[in-house]
Length: 94
Image (cartoon, rainbow, N blue to C red; front, side, top):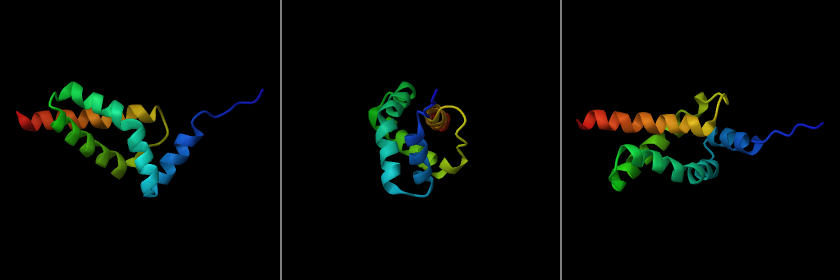
């Protein structure tokens, strides 16, 4: 029985993005930004503020991408960064 690794493409894409490959970063952004915008919209109802938080969150994702250890879901890791970015914004706002 042959075992096929399902997410080798994603792992390779992450490695390229860590090496500051802008095309790989763009592919990751394009893949995850629609879902992550939905996450931001759950916390901030205004679309423009949610989009700003999305961009701030992805800036954090790409600056800390080298710390991702391929444990757990990559989407979950990004989601946690987006949630923390939104919560931080809401705390500063009040």
